[in-house]
Length: 300
Length: 317
Image (cartoon, rainbow over all chains, first blue to last red; front, side, top):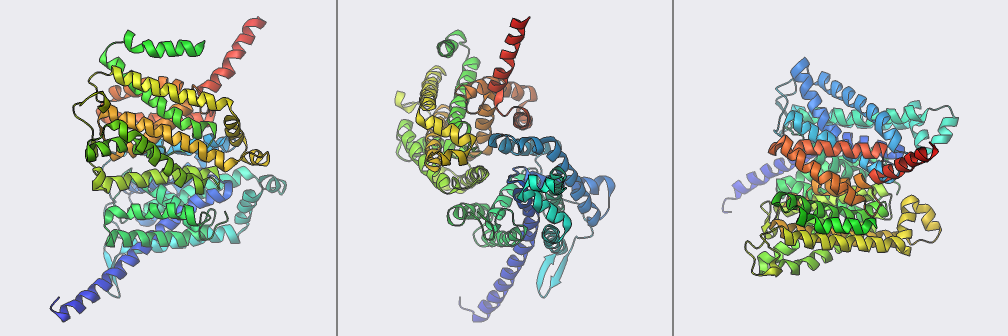
């Protein structure tokens, strides 16, 4: 490059772009952390992997859209509506399906939510079609300039809310009576029962919290990204990778891991190309299997 | 006796039903039965539920067509290469995950299958998203490219025979007892001296090898492969549902499952039209959930439970 001045401007610009990519990745990662904390909660409670978790996120996105279109209202309303709707679905699925299969063989446990994922995914394809949709203009549209970094308001708000909720879930589990009851059931179902805790209610609550977290994460993500029914599969796999990195059963672990995965994904999409971002993340999963199967903060 | 009747029925099927459509269904049935029987070894007998078996199917499907495209080799030469690659991949996945809970293995299989699918879709060497094509016209029988369905039918039937005979052989050996012991309680099996990890690894490798052969047969028959038809999640779904519907861990479970599911699939595709394959998968999802919830043993177990009861009632009356 002949022009030194141009190069220094280019360097400053690329530095800004790098910061922008990093911040964007962390904000998306915060949402990954939120829905992954739901998956890790169920694992911690009952040693059970929910293969339909990504579909819960996808349904949260459509729930937000339906609320906006049919009822109206701002982001707070549709986000809470999506959380409540998915939470209710989670509780219903616990009582109708999970409570029975958890006593059954491994095959039944895995096939139950795997079949559920297919059922939800293809029903969504059937109802909503495979076309990408996005939320109409809302209070979060527009961008904000933070010290030279331009950020969509929606991403910023969604990221902050997601981190807050994930921390709140962690505090709920570690600092409150309800949290102690949940952990007591996870530790020893029978002993918890003898202490006057109803395990069924606690596990149903865990499913409600888990699916509710997925639902609100979906609604938050819907404010800034277009989606189709196929995103459920991707989010489900991302949640696996986040939980594998953060450690099974650790909400705090999934917070750190979600941020890391968001960052890695944004960086690889930017510097390697968009098609490689999932390859890098899933490749990381295989590497984790070999190197540190218990994750950053997990117990094996 | 039953086995002889079954073999006779399968051998005579294309003779009795000589229409192209019936033979096409017959070939589809055999392919589904082969891959589900292969899945059954690790998923049914050992109870290690893989939901990403498409990775072995896809390797088996890609290998023959890749070496045909590169060097003009006969697809037959690619089959052992697919088997070797599949066993290697089985080791890569099995070694780390078989130390952990069974859920971890399932999660790893689906993630790795998806990783490979996306990767193959971006890799020009293997045709990227477009895929690979086989021989358009056969240079000889060794190209496995026939105009009629009949040679495919009997080749597939022979392979199904080999897979089922191997499974039946295993069932009665010490290895088969190890597998069932691991399935019912890994901890108990280990404490009785069963080499748990090695046994699971061997079951996965064997299952991967047979699944790879099923993929090679599919590629030879269709003469074409792309990332979705090789490594797509629906390929894995079909193996799981066919085996689980009939009865996972039962020798003839996959046969019963395929007998019900393949006609159902063809019927629902024609009822709902070309765009209706989504409805077929809604149906699949529903069936899988119902099996898991009400009858994890599949139709075979249902049959064993219901039929003697009726007999008892008949004799009592």
